[in-house]
Image 1 (cartoon, rainbow, N blue to C red):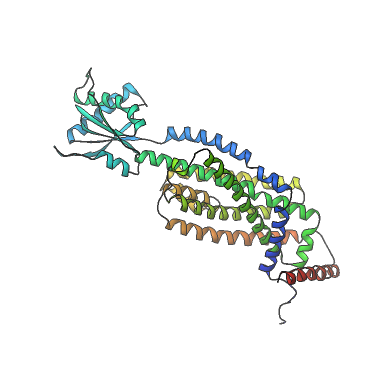
Image 2: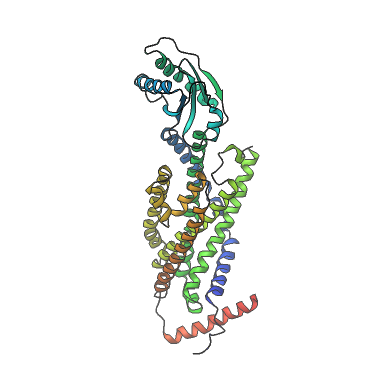
Length: 420
């Protein structure tokens, strides 16, 4: 068997040539300036969605009050809470048994609250006759009267006077941290979704334009179609990285000028530096997965109208996937979360949320390895469909094909020689 034709580029060399060509053509075009202005509208949507989401979370996330008293006092407080609930209604916080202390034993509520990671927002210690409420400043003002009411009914059913509630303030609590992390998870998912949907759609317009002016057929005659697919996909990923860098730098400058820092927000489970690193990795994986689908869809279309028609189901399906991943945040440790983590298209969104709420790192290593495998499968399948559809885009004779191949092969050979 003869040796490989030295005048024909390998698939990776050809993919690099295509990626460099598309990257420079888009980066130095006037349209790229308008592209950078595109996120102004998603930012407005994010602000509105964030306000609505915060209101929903304030209603959905439970904040419990723990009872740490002697055994008989715990029973009396819980029974009184059920009795008072009929009078007060939903405004009365949920009370749970935290610990039954021995007579004369003290319970350090401040230390417990600051180290607690669950939904506990306050702790009542002491006795029904002299309760002590430990919570953050905002919840002290909101709950001290309700705790006094429950304590009065616990010490003397039908009491007309209420005991004075002593208070102790803590900087944070498990419920506050949990709420903050959930908001970070929701914001991270929404930002990831908007970036992927905004940037992945670029590959469609570029592909349809080149199919319309027959450039794609010239490329198909010179290099493997798999290389064209890979080159276009990674060129658009590079453009996306440039756009995100510009938007991120601008946003950081605006927030810094306004006096906003990361310390104003709840620290993610893995910490801010690792969260940003994982966010970038999951963006790359999610972009390559969806970009491979969009490129395969684009290979089926010949006009912009057909692109819009064919891409609509893929876009709507991705929106459903996003809402499914958002639902997984409310089912931490349940089958919905694990399903969202395993399904390739929802895995990046589910894992970004997990990075915000959980501290362990090893699940992210498994998720990234799984997503990389899925990217390879999606790219291979998309390239196969891309090759079959594009090669059928126009008939040409064998002689004409060989002549075109010889002509364009010489062009790419000269270009690769100049590169070296």
